[in-house]
View 1 (cartoon, helix red, strand yellow):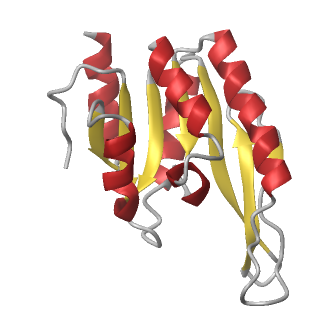
View 2 (cartoon, helix red, strand yellow):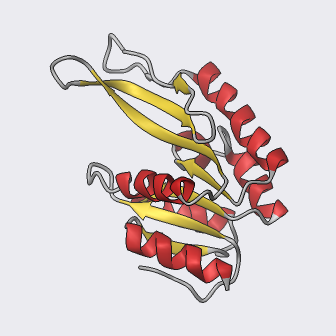
Amino acid sequence: MTSDSNPAAFAAVVYSPGSGGRKALQRFVERLKARDVSVGGLLQEVVVDSEGVVTGFCAVDVSTGRRFPITRPVTRDDECGLDVSALVETTGIVRNAIAERPDLIVVEKFGDQEQNGKGLSDEILQTIATGIPLLVAVPEAALPIWQERTGELGSVLDCSEEALEQWWHGLAR
C-alpha cells in the first residue's frame, strides 16, 4: 500500500481497526525520540482496568508524555463515550507543536470527528500547510475521506515500522 511517488511531507498511516497495528506508530515515534529527533503531536493509549477490560482512551502529548482522557465510560449503548471538551484541549497540543516546529508531528488518529471536519481537522491541515512532516493514523475505511480532504496529496503507508522508516528516510533525501 505504500505510495511514495508524492513528494508532500505528510502521510496517512493506514490501519485496520482491531488489528493492533497502530502500535507501529508508537514504536516508530519512540525510536525517533531516542535518536534525538524532535517529535510533537498526539498518540492514543488504551486504558484498561485490573481485569484487562478496555475502559477508555487517553490522548498522549508526544513531547511531554502528559495524558488526557478522551473517552469516558458510558452507561447506555446509545451513548457516545467521546469527551468532546477533552478533545478540544488536545487541539492546543497540536497547535503548540506547530508553533515549536518539530522535525515531525504525529496525530493518532483521523477519527469520526476529523472525518466530519471537526476535532483536529484544522490542526492537521495547518500542519500540512506549514510543511512540517506529518504522520496521521487513518482507519482503512476512512482513507477515501482522507484522500478527498488532502486532494490525494501525500503518501499512503501501511501501518508498519518498516514503511514508516522508509518514508522518514525518503524525506531526508
